[in-house]
Amino acid sequence: MRYMLIMMLASIFGLLAAPYRHADARPLRDSSSLSTSLGQLPMERPGTSMHAGSWDRMGHNLDFRTIAPRHTLVLLNYKGAGVIRQFWTTFPGSITARCQLILRMYWDGEKHPSVRVPLGAFFGVGFGRQVDYQSAALEETSGGYNCWWPMPFHKSAHWTITNMSKKTTHGFYWNIDFDAYHHLPPHMLEFHALWRQESPVLAGHNYVILSTTGRGQYVGTALFMQAARNRSLGFLEGNEMVYIDDKTTGRQLYQGIGPPKPGMIMLRIEGTGTEDYFLSGWYFDKGPYSAPYHGCLIKQRGRVSAYRWHIQDPILFKKSILMSIQVGAEDNFPADYSSVAYWYQTQPHPVYPPLPDAAALLPHPRPPIFVIPDAIPGVSLIRGAKPSTGRVVNQNMQGFGTAWSGGSQLWWTGASRGSELVLRVPAVKEGKYRLIGYFTKARDYGTFQLYHRGKAFGPEINCYSPNVVATGAVSFGVLALHPGANKITVRMVGKSRKSIDYFFGLNAFVLRAVH
Image 1: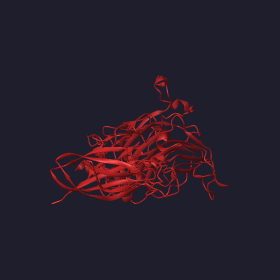
Image 2 (image 1 turned 180 degrees about the vertical axis):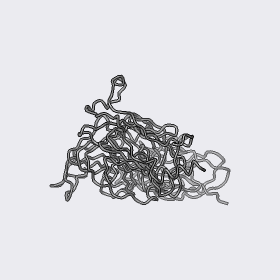
Image 3 (image 1 turned 90 degrees about the vertical axis):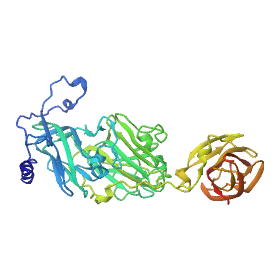
Image 4 (image 1 turned 45 degrees about the vertical axis):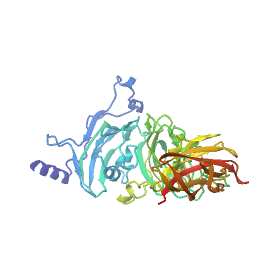
């Protein structure tokens, strides 16, 4: 009780957060001595090693702090010049804590923070998730969160953490290691990081990761992307687009759609796709991974969290930078985006827009996957399917909307007039069943007829449509089936004059017992 009273009085009177300086700090004349490569470790470096953290000032083992709702905790308050070398923290692992604890960093007495990011997002992972990974700048490993971005400051450094949630955070630990100097070279830029969010991203506009003025270099992106209406990854078709040193006020940005109009602000950098920007390919086809300068930490249906550090290739700007990315091929894919931009620049920087309310900091739930009750999914029939020509594969349909049960279909390509596809449809027991089918229509689909025991049944289905659409439920009448697999044959009997091929897509069958 006595210990807690002393700690509370110390916090009230600012004893734990009081600014401190080190009298033995030396000037840093050559910024090249900041390098920490293995080969340079034997070289003597100037400066004085300093530390700030949550260790127990009373000499016991209560090395943590508690942050009540709507309260702010000071992590660092130092007067003087220095360079932050490493920041470590650990705290109870909840989505609420990772999304609603707000980290702020102030340099050189500024009134507005240079860093303002939800704590979990600051470490490069989106959606309030914790993912063990390693990279050159940030990492999460076995409960610990680590930052290695170097952060110079010329006069002072002041860090805070604010709890915007309705829950008290218990057990918040941190350590900050830095070098102290009498002064730094004036050309050293200061570290910045900003979290942004658009839910959903405005149609017809790029998502803006960063827009700032000043002189500096852009060094990293953590981007958290989620489809708003389905679970497709179609948003990955968007290209990154960077505008450098342009006056954007009152002028329209050329966003890579159609020919540019006179007077538009043209791109300095345009990429070839979102996963390409993150130095991967084919929609991150091998799944999540981490590497020193890039990684995909979350890949789920309709949701991706990825990072890209421009450590070897910083993007330089002398007046301004607008870092943006398309959402889909033509900014027409409904999606929720949030991001963290990391960069260095001169001060003062533009004041950041206000944060949204606490609830908006939490991740949006993913849209549900549409499922037809009692369906026999088409993809479940692929293994036993036997086409006379062509091939049968699983096709993801989430990029075309939410009308496909489970978000995928059996897709038969390479057919022609007269081609047949034998399917084995399972029945639980012997009896009569009404067969209901769910199919796909598109501009390259044919006309088919179903057969059972050598006889045609149900209507011919013309699957031509100028757009990709689901047919909805189609009834084929009543069949007598035996227990286990029953052979149902799809025969391609023709196609519309407007159709350009003989494709066939089966989303699902449903068997309704007839009594």
